[in-house]
Image (tube, rainbow over all chains, first blue to last red; front, top):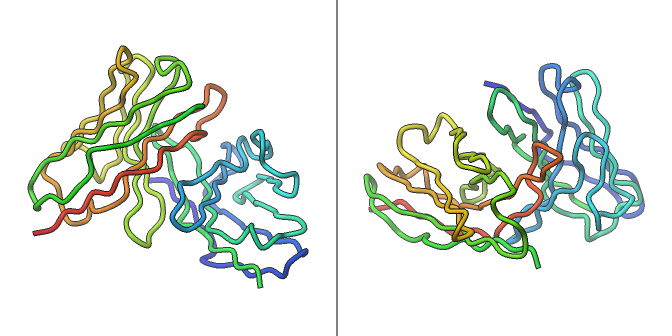
Length: 106
Length: 119
């Protein structure tokens, strides 16, 4: 079955840029999606179809996807961006999630 | 307001059964594909099952195939998950989630309902 690999954690200083990677075999041939989940809350879609932001998602969230790696970038990170982030793809009639990356804003 | 509200979770013994429900409001339920996604305590997200708009196409994760059954009632704006032969590893928060018409993702999530499988 298809697998997506994310780093367990990423640390970033306020105002700096956080980059979260998601790796999978030929992931660039599929669409990548990203979700933000804060403690005790349901996930929120922050990037869809590699680069698009749903309505209401701040411009500081951006995405890219090429080769075997998709990347979620948070520019000018705020304290409120501290959360778990999950990548997701669709493969062989199944939705696949990465294990998640905890972003800590120090 | 677009909303999904799950119910039906609780404590059940190993080998037991439970039926989850998800009530949709604020959108035309029959026009959207739906899914169940779960999250074990302290763990990541795991997709469980998918159902098409009409209910004619259904997919399951290997971990629940043969034990769980997804269904929907478009007249009642409701999604269901019948869970049989429950195991300790099925303990999780279960979310229902909507698929937008333009992407293979989940754009609307419910608040989740907790299922605990324990003796």
